[in-house]
Length: 308
Image (cartoon, rainbow, N blue to C red; front, top):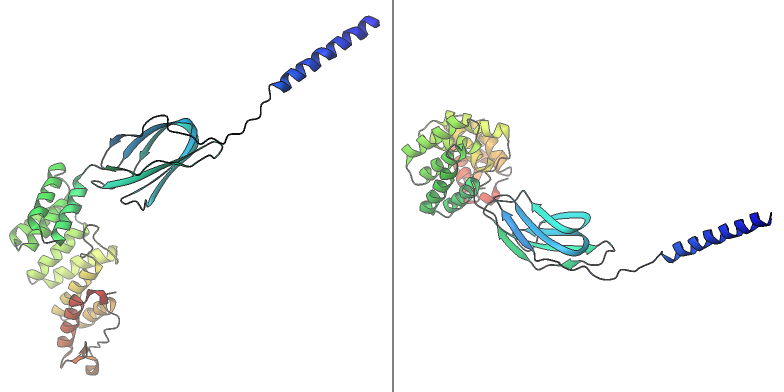
């Protein structure tokens, strides 16, 4: 009995000793140190729509990247995982565009953010960026540079209907109607529903005194999207199409349809084909509805801010 008691006391002593030893291993720490870069920031690769960034931190961190075409940084990439090695791909970028970005990071304890300086990269060009630049040159009436940009787009992708449509519009601008017809016809054969092609063909229809065909082509665009705006030139849009459509209806003696288009473009125009007292445009009275209608169209062309 005495031996058993001694054995129990020894066992209890061993257990208590182990307990105290384990307690001594519990260490409570407080982290108030901000993380730091452990390597330089690198831009590993850039394509026409992506950029790959790499850097390391001296402890596990979560990150945020603000980026955009200006230092207003209109986009955000965020990774809430805490890690020391950061390999990030920004995607969905516009081609041939200079981007600004700034990196922020915090450690697991929330220390931070560490803010890296604003850094830039430029995405690579592709056929769409050359199209965008070419259309900008057209808006500036720099037709030689526009052709150079469209040529660059063609060299990258000679099978894109939108490039042939761009050539067609360029030739319309410089009155090369034979080339305009050929290029727009090629674009149409490649992609029959492309709005910018149909819009160009409608312009040719009006030049060739084919208003009925212009009506058909314009309505194909507007029936698909009544708020259509060409992405590379906002001057070509539902507004310019409806101006042409109103004129085409007028030329085919569809006066009610012509007035309907005018009402959409300029709801306050006040004209009524059947009410002579309404034939007033910009405080000037006209003897016929036809005269008043043409005056209203010309007024809108001169004052596009009135449209819509």
